[in-house]
Length: 169
Image (cartoon, rainbow, N blue to C red; front, side, top):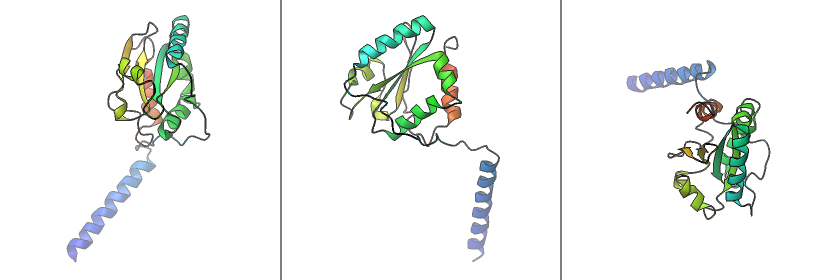
């Protein structure tokens, strides 16, 4: 009986400690839910042509290119897209990057591009690669870093963008 009471007290302490951590703002919240249903991965788009256009734009505007592999069926892809368009993050994206959404269909489209840019889709989507304006691969996500909107926060997205914006790496 005493062990049960001690266990209950410990559990109560741990829960109240967690509440204090959340109340103090120390716990990260995942990306907010998307507020609208958008087609971010259009069907029948030539992803190679879009990447070429993005690279041409990046050269002229001194930005980098972010390739975001995913599909319209992917909740986390919509959450990341909403984060990229949010008031806090959109200025960083728009100033430093050209974003290309590469449609992977049902894991049956543009797989050659995922291979070319060293993005292991089996780790989940969205999955990203960062290219220099000359098309050089600077970074590709290897561990499904953006795969779970519940696990990543706006702060994580900002940290990623700040690390890979021009002049940083």
